[in-house]
Length: 424
Image (cartoon, rainbow, N blue to C red; front, side):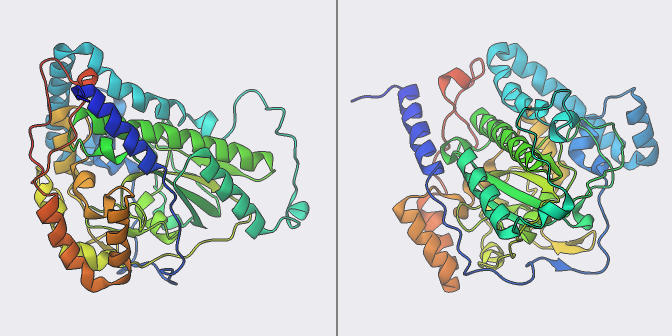
């Protein structure tokens, strides 16, 4: 049977969905007592207003804009240039095809709705009829942390997350102040995330879509997974509150904490060269969410499954990044010795396309789908460190020059076409 382009695309999309939902068994073999990141000196908390995404969201002429650049004039020229590039790219895409242009913003829009303060805190005007269980401090002792943890984890998996772990919420990983676009909270409001535990959630992405690299398709996949896991965050927080414990959803649009070190603490994975968390089951091909709570919980341990050695040997993402934003060496960042992406280079590239890029996720050798072949390679990489280098060579031979997944015809702007940037 001869498939048209979109028929082939839908076939690949469905295959990606099946592999995305394949079982992920969490092994306790690699658990350790201390995280693999290195702390050197005192950890400086980060102000969310200083992140490049928050700076780009500032609007010229507003009080927030004037106040911020009065404090940080060193960022103004770069940020103004970035905003101008983004505006021109967005206008160009809109004029090319106003119908397709609206697809990507709309898959992100749901996560914006689910990040509103009343929703994440469960402070809507109405009180659901199921919110009737009153558990005071004395009665709470009758609930075993192990049982509550098992129940909430199982429910999260039922709702659609791929992996869930829990840890203590550390103050050093909490932002000092809120800022757009990460939060609809008042700009500059001090963060008040005073909870004991945090439940970390990972939703695996459809790798077929992510494999479009810097195509429009990958950005839609990112936005949609963020929206779905945001819904799960809100649902879990509502459930915990119905049990009588404090809880706050931490969806993508309202998460005033550092995801990477928190997920490392929970044993979700280790930090990879790109600066983000790599899981042992599906690499960094996921989107995060979380719930902060005071509900008694059994916390998980961090893990060490060899990704530090693997990334030291692997340079594939460095070579693939079109703007060379991925570091060759670790550096000291606010008291932590780590790989630190050049966020400004990365963001400028995003602005030039008017949508996010997923090239580094698409090329990571640890991110392959759960096929028998790739699971076998994953097994050897996990258990035999000497296999790291041969597996990287194998990737370069088999995959380095393969083509990106093309955007389907219904998501190609104007006279656009398949992604022209080569995988290598």
